[in-house]
Amino acid sequence: MSGTTQAVDQADLVKRIRSWGSELGFQQIGISDIDLRTAESRLGDWLRLRYHGEMVYMERHGTRRTRPELLVPGTVSVVTARMDYWPDDAGESAALLDHPSKAYVSRYALGRDYHKVLRSRLQALANRIEREIGPHGHRVFVDSAPVLEKPLAEKAGLGWIGKHTNLINRDAGSWFFLGELYTDIPLPADSAEESHCGSCRACLDVCPTRAIVGPYQLDARRCISYLTIELHGSIPEEFRKPMGNRIYGCDDCQLFCPWNKFAQATAEADFRPRHGLDDVQLTELFSWSEEIWMKNTEGSAIRRIGYERWLRNIAVALGNAESSAEVINALQEKRNHGSEIVREHVQWALSQHELAA
Image (cartoon, rainbow, N blue to C red):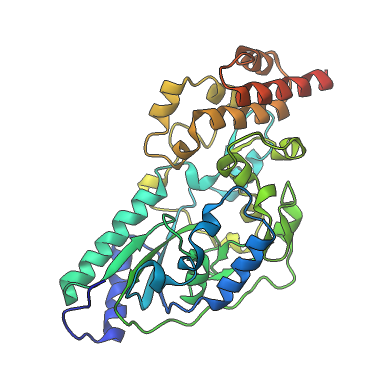
């Protein structure tokens, strides 16, 4: 990083950064220092328990994840921004869970890939700062590098890490994305938020696979988001029935969190549902050819799982769907699919309908 070219009034600069952030569509901007010793200890415990499963990248970068100055030399402050993405009514989304014939896609993935949206806005914020004070050392991150975004956001006063390990804001719930701007500008830090979960355990009780093994403890190996997105191979059979119709990610712990009664629908056109993914039949999605899938997932976060895992996930959901000729025929058509993974999950799905017959 290179230093700033002129002295600045940091307190005044922070006020302007918040104003510019608002103009760029962020709902909140917070500032933190880079001391993540407590988070580093908790991450170490989590990794030792192997709760990260196949996500080897969580341990690959060592202390660069917990010590920002090692990831980006010269960093002394972190600007964290949040942007709401809630696209529709909570009641409608909750009613879609375990629907007998429709798919459930995690609300964050219904629209355009958030990485692209937030990254461009954060870079615009960095450019605005540069126009104001001159060149400054910085780097933008949106879930794209070893960054502990939730502990940083908590320190920046944007919310607290709830029992489900997501960040919760008392005025906005948890339906928002986070992005960071590492900077060499020494900015005054905001006060960290305190936890307001109290005795509530709604998220622990509603988790379909009991992935939240204790308050503030998530075993990703059991989490449907991990199983449908991060896991590359076969989904363990013990989790297939609990997955229901969730084909990409899982929102249960957020849908039933009392704090999300304060969530506001996003005004961002990029986050609006595409291709009817918020209300679509499983059989329709299963019928997409790879060419159609590539076209319909262009610019979407869903693209990252690839076509094979897409079919694998839907096959499981079809195994949990209400038996019908349409469902059976859809599965039969892919019984001899070229992918061994797809064939295995299709066969499992068919066996579920045979057992129910």
